Image 1 (tube, helix red, strand yellow):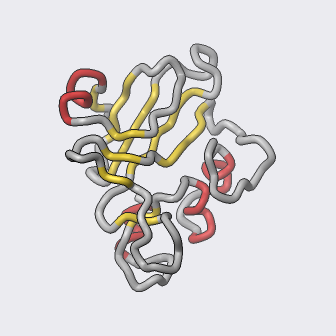
Image 2 (image 1 turned 60 degrees about the horizontal axis):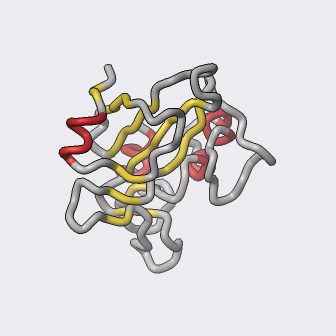
Length: 144
């Protein structure tokens, strides 16, 4: 919902209705997520804490590529020629993965602009590429 709000309301005021794709933590500065979510970003552009702090046992990352398109689409683009590669006009993708595999969780979760969450098993590793359609069908299940 934070991404939908960001795009709909042009939260960063850059004059472009785009999604924030730079990181998860960046959404905090626009008041769209709680600080606890931002502190759990394992790859923030600007770290809020020295070491990420898991939220309910999970870390978050912004994905970098979308393999559902050929060729794969970079999710970090410069849509306004001022902000750098931190936006995309029509896509975003995030991943939540266990901070300690099989201790704090065993499933990995992904979500994109279609707002359907998927659950998969990556042995606790983060996913930085949204899967191809075949990969999504083969390796992920809708999470409800």
